[in-house]
Amino acid sequence: MLSRLMSGSSRSLEREYSCTVRLLDDSEYTCTIQRDAKGQYLFDLLCHHLNLLEKDYFGIRFVDPDKQRHWLEFTKSVVKQLRSQPPFTMCFRVKFYPADPAALKEEITRYLVFLQIKRDLYHGRLLCKTSDAALLAAYILQAEIGDYDPGKHPEGYSSKFQFFPKHSEKLEKKIAEIHKTELSGQTPATSELNFLRKAQTLETYGVDPHPCKDVSGNAAFLAFTPFGFVVLQGNKRVHFIKWNEVTKLKFEGKTFYLYEKKIILTYFAPTPEACKHLWKCGIENQAFYKLEKSSQVRTVSSSNLFFKGSRFRYSGRVAKEVMESSAKIKREPPEIHRAGMVPSRSCPSITHGPRLSSVPRTRRRAVHISIMEGLESLRDSAHSTPVRSSSHGDTFLPHVRSSRADSNDRVAVIADEAYSPADSVLPTPVAEHSLELMLLSRQINGATCSIEEEKESEASTPTATEVEALGGELRALCQGHGGGPEQQQVNKFVLSVLRLLLVTLGLLFVLLLLLIILTESDLDIAFFRDIRQTPEFEQFHYQYFCPLRRWFACKIRSVVSLLIDT
Image (cartoon, rainbow, N blue to C red; front, side, top):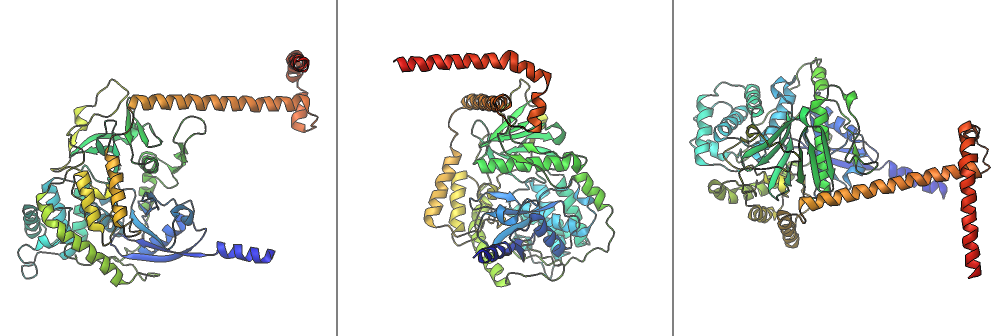
């Protein structure tokens, strides 16, 4: 029986799990991993498949059963992190946007970053003015369909491609005009490089938005970029704090705190899990962009009071080390196979050798068709309905603990329209009922939804009941938080004092036990024997402890005698 149990345990440890990772071009890479495989093993497999050396900018993202997004931690087991039933589905994405993408050493790395920023543009995360949007879209056209050819590109050809969450006829004409007149002769690599250089100058470059609320209940998006921490609201960047000015990041429950030199910004995430994810992203980004060496990375606690709170440590290299390592790369540039654009959606492909396994193209095509059907039904309304955030105010006054007001130079208009990436607020499953779910979200938030999210949350098709329940949760989220900020601060202070009192009592109890063991027990341990032989302990024992013990014994005898008499 023992041998049977041991063999069963070994089979459980050796069990293989199927993992599917969606790449930036929407193709899929499938492999199998062992039960105890770490995230680093899966990531290395993927980078080897892509022939990618400058891999520190990228990561693997997944969605847990509670629809919360996470970055896969490379030092922990993949199976334990996902907490879902296999087969596992994840996404390969840019995690740390390079401060200067044009300075990347290899073209394959620039191409992958190009694909990521193109996705950001399509999903509404990279927002910009109309003139900048037209130029970026023209670069994409040039990179993926080449020079303008009247025989292949009839009038209105740019309207057949979807670059943004919404289009206008004027914008489409501007895109075609730039493509025809200004970009002729540029190779795909040159167009992608120019695209990256332009995108890098935008206020929302590198933004992976986290939806939150300020202390007044107004919606805002928090994000971490290569240059610092930003807060976006309406069509403005209302806060920008450089990394060297951020002194501390902390969270408690749903509340997120950012400490600057003289102010503290306070925001509320939808759930404690979302707040913890926001905090971890901030810790990683600050370490990656701010530190000079990875040896300077320290374990960070979410609270500064004893053992309370979560602890987290960034485990990768920092930006400066990555750049130094990239400069030493010496190899023949890997071949990049680019494919032409697909109408209504840009989907170039990338291949670098045989894949271990792949999902049939028919399945990917079915998913693509379902998305496009929803796109066509919403496109007319998207032409006429401006994108609006759930916040109606144009300015934003953060909760600060300082008399110093924010300077006006921190408020910058980032676009002609409000910043409202719908996929950051509500994951959009690619399923039959995804259209009605998007419409529900748009009615609640007052914003036009992007048609497709990162495809990270296509766990199951929502039923009508689930859609209604989700709508109730969103309405509850849009309502104010119970209790004012003053009451919350008082409650947190009381809890901190109680924690301090409990820890102090616990330490005193431990010291009392140690004292009793030293004075009353007959344990002949070298550690105790050395303490007992010190002059200080003997003096304490005879001058203080013995009289105190006699006093306690006398009191106990008197109490016992009183009880016996009664």
